[in-house]
Length: 533
Image 1 (cartoon, rainbow, N blue to C red):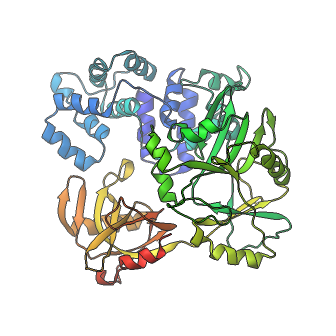
Image 2 (cartoon, helix red, strand yellow; image 1 turned 30 degrees about the vertical axis):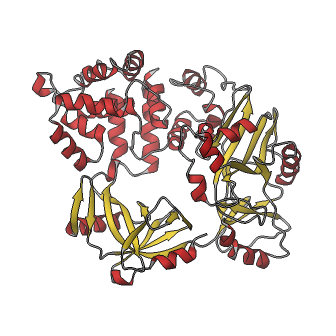
Image 3 (cartoon, rainbow, N blue to C red; image 1 turned 120 degrees about the vertical axis):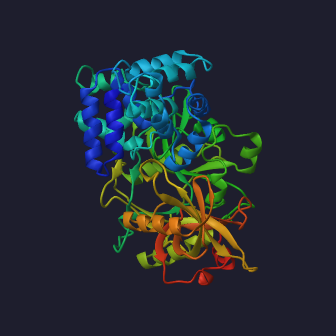
């Protein structure tokens, strides 16, 4: 546990991506099996210990620590696992506060998994007694998930690939066919066996991504143009009698969209945009549309279980862009034009309520294409995709192959209303902001939340301002004077019955702090309502 806890400490206190890659790589090379496999699983969010829940951690903490002190401290620290790790009173029980190296990650995982739900909290408490604060934090994060140390699954996989001289795309090809502690993965990485075979498992393949088209122009003789729809990119994979639906980050979201997964029973791998269909929820049937706004899709995102009522209210479908595999045949080396022709043939027998093919844009010139892009917002489209007709399907972003030409963001001047503490390395700062606009009656109503878009220096300035202009406190949340204007950028805005203002922003971020503008001159709800799609 000592090496893993040191790794987490080091990751929290470094911002350099390259340094993080090296730290993880060193840990994976130097740590024995199966500990390093469980460590990698924790870093990638694939480690599951179902016998330990957050409520159980709170319960054992309340047995050792005064509950008032526990929750006051939690409000200040911003993370329950870190709070318990710091307050756990081992010294008072006569046990020295030191990691005595008797607890390995593999030992902790196996003991907790084999315990019942009733036994597991007591097993966890006994292990906490033998660890120092860093070790306790590592164990609690291992048990409950969500490390929050400034990395994501892709970065951890990249670190693994770099550490053993592999291509991260090759790692991604087999990742979802393996389980912790990844013995086959390390055997392959260290040359003891060939790359693991995952023939009959619906594994994730890395997506081909696009570069932003900034000031460049391209020839429509060389590039095909498609609409960029306002949904989420997904990959449909059917193999071994099972279908999985993956997000762009490789997360399995089949449980949130069982209606889509169940409708795809053709062996192969398809790439497309997940959308919600609905006549009264979004867009008219134009440009191959019939797609609702992202706000409608968001009603189903992140749900582990979806009711039939939810499926009926927000029926999902996939607008297909590309094909990677037709059966066992790998098509990724073919040109986009050849893959497009194959995709159209493969899509023909599929359920048209669940699948259709992205419509190509017929434009005579680049200038005409630019005019179509300017009008894209009216039909809930993010912009335009430009794909080189002779391009193979390659993982990641390759210059000159695919471009995304997104519409310009919308902006609004909003008034800061509330601020909450961040998590992880931001737990000491008020970094999560709720902001609002004025109603016709003069009431300030919240229209969105944002926690990025600002620099580190701006974060420090905002944190000082919030502390000096607090009017009320609600645990980790502060209500502030309604006097600071923030310019907020967002991709789109939609009507929403879930919000008091009746509006919901898509991808809001802080673009500027408007200390020059009086709060009374911030935008009104009517201005935002006119932007809503």
